[in-house]
Image (cartoon, rainbow, N blue to C red):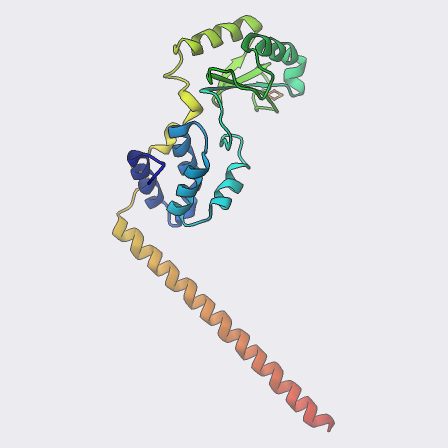
Length: 227
Ligand code: FES
């Protein structure tokens, strides 16, 4: 039985059809699975692997490389506070300590209600607005302690859910045009690509055999010459 919901699987198949190589859809599919579960459950990774024709270990290997993909459960809102140098000078340590006290978890922890995960982040590339905070990978600006409190209140009350969707699912995983091509055309292009690859492999093999033959011939003639 499928772990991913039928509508997610349908969208996943549509996404796969957008790419010449199914495995190119791997990351968008991971985001889709996160939209369903909030993180990449092992059973979701197995299904993604089957959809794009790779192994579950390869899915996991890719997912663990990217901060935006979670291989362990995270809260509905991932609050990341940058403590890198510019933000450190801007009061990030104090802000993080306040967030820990307010949420009752250390950095890396998730509140018991599963609503918030707090993260001590490396540079978030918004160094002119310190201390930089993101929620579900969306910039919410350089925040004072009071502004962070107001933000957490808003999130807890669901007042920012339009702007900051749960688990940070990216709107761009829904595509309704642009790259879409007819499936028959895609199949024809994939078949032509496979044929071209087979031709290249055959040509390389023939060349290898010809070189081996030439080398054998010259060794033979050398051998005769020295006899
Ligand atoms: S140092 Fe904090 S965003 Fe760059």
